[in-house]
Image 1 (cartoon, rainbow, N blue to C red):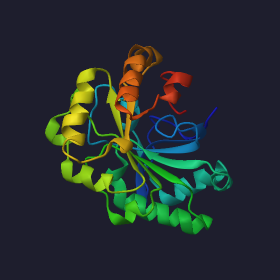
Image 2 (spheres, helix red, strand yellow):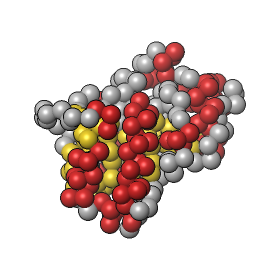
Image 3 (tube, rainbow, N blue to C red):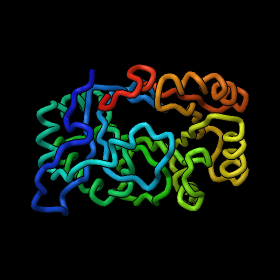
Image 4 (tube, helix red, strand yellow):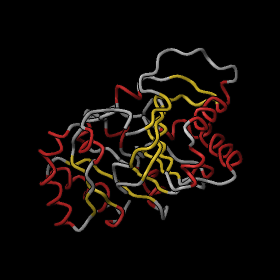
Amino acid sequence: MSTIIIEGNPKFKKSVTDPGQTLEIAEFFCDTIQGENFIGWPAAFLRVQHCTQSCIFCDTTEIWRHGNPYSFDELFDLMDQADLQRKFRKGQRLVLTGGSPVQQQDKLIFFLNELILRYGFKPYIEIENEATLMPKEGLIELIDCWNNSPKLKNSYNPRDFRYQPDILKKLASLKNSWFKFVVSCEEDWEEIKKDFLDTHLIIESQIVLMPLGASRSELEKYRELVLDIAIRENVRYSTREHIVLWDKKTGV
């Protein structure tokens, strides 16, 4: 079972004195696994507050909408208490998730560089990204795996907010970048083909299809359909293993 460093929906804490060296955090936990895309890797999840989207199927909405500012020193102290330096050296990955980590990218660049200086090495770093904000070079250099998740019409986000071709093109140019799409019907694949493949924004080898599902029952409803589409179209399939294992439980 995972180790909780900062609980989801944390209660009020007093503000830190230097807002320039803070991150707005919803939750932080380790000793779990990555449940999407590259499934199964031991991982620590740093979930930031706020998001650019409001997807109808989001399984963490009630987490990232809440949170508090934590100073870098507070976060480093909490990481030390969880023995994360040793765990990172042994291969546990740091996953930046949200909400929208890129919304806080300036502070994340600063924080990650401080972490590297403090530990004397760089852990493997993944980022979960809704692909609506342009990443800066300073962040790109620090990320080992971009788990991009552009939103389709099925998210019920306005197209102008969720579909950003220039940003998608930039992300697709990165060799360590993949695009996870939440799918529940054939029309979703047609949208992917029309807006992402036919426009040459991304290529098929970067695509990962995931069944829509914030619960086990939802995953079961759409899993076979999405698997069939992935096999037919010769693209990768990913379950949401954390949902399979723990259903709607958070902090895992």
